[in-house]
Image 1 (cartoon, rainbow, N blue to C red):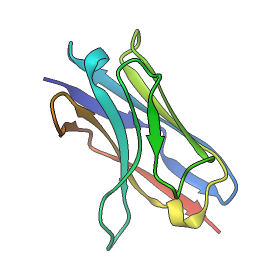
Image 2: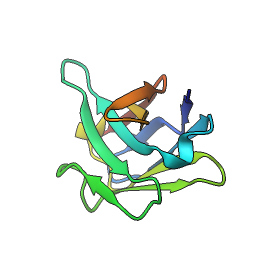
Image 3: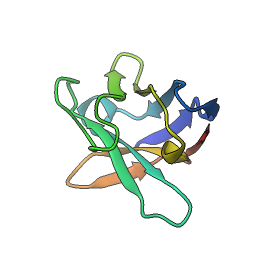
Image 4: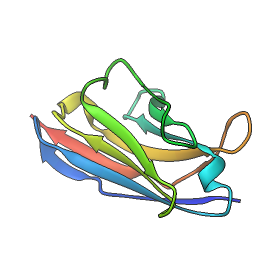
Length: 117
């Protein structure tokens, strides 16, 4: 079992940066694909970024490519999302999730990111 706790959200002006962290507990973290998702009011949940167990393989939604960077530190059981050049449309609740099998099966409680124009 994996427990996930996000932190680092907040209010930032457009063009600013935030770094989200997701602390994981459980022995399967280092072998799990990790992802960051977001959901804005009235919109479907969107996968923002994902990272393989080793950290070498990453992928991003087109909407955040070149602005967001996902990384992980398996020694600290933590995955990060560095968000730069933030836009008002990035406003959402951000969730981290762990894929221990074929789908994302563990989720954090979410952290709010609000970008003001």
